[in-house]
Amino acid sequence: QVQLQQSGPGLVKPSQTLSLTCAISGDSVSSNSAAWNWIRQSPSRGFEWLGRTYYRSKWYNDYAISVKSRITINPDTSKNQFSLQLNSVTPEDTAVYYCASGWTNFDYWGQGTLVTVSS
Amino acid sequence: SYVLTQPPSVSVAPGQTARITCGGNNIGSKSVHWYQQKPGQAPVLVVYDDSDRPSGIPERFSGSISGNTATLTISRVEAGDEADYYCQVWDSSSDHPGVFGTGTKVTVL
Image 1 (tube, rainbow over the protein chains, first blue to last red):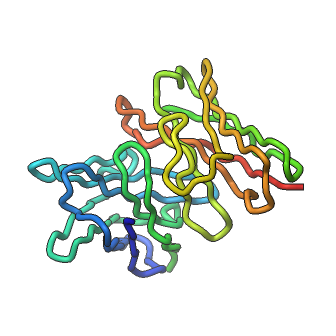
Image 2 (cartoon, rainbow over the protein chains, first blue to last red):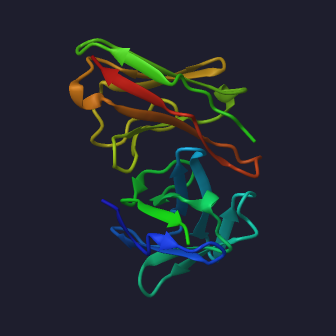
């Protein structure tokens, strides 16, 4: 059974960087069959897939076009976790952020982190 | 980008059958997945690849697809099934490949 545990601040100032981490147990971030995703949910935009990282003999990333210029998802093999960085945030980035595993669907989810962008 | 449309709400009496639809252009060419989300909780995958159930999901949850509409059916509805339900597809040709539906609130009367 895969478990995902999220950590990171719940309040970020406008123009700063949102940073979250997702620790994995029950699987490996370096698995050749898994993918590790970040998804957010807000009342105004619903669910929005942001991007993923995965290992297939080398590391790959896919990002949604809406955040591609601002997002970085990185694996950390030493800690078996992956991270989200979203730069230059605005109040529109206020949402509950989830990490999730899965290639084309999302079978395991983190507990969610409400991130508020406000000064 | 690809759009998935769901009815905002469905009401059903206990023991009856709830049907939640998800419409999308040529949705039959894609694999449809369904999630249950209760207030304050993360989503739970209840159906994947149109009609398969993950381990631990009751047989009361089933999925089907016909034409441009996918349907999640909940048989013998229980009070604990009250939740929001979302469909989802992966549109690999899109710049926003992970697409979710608008969500349906299921109320158990």
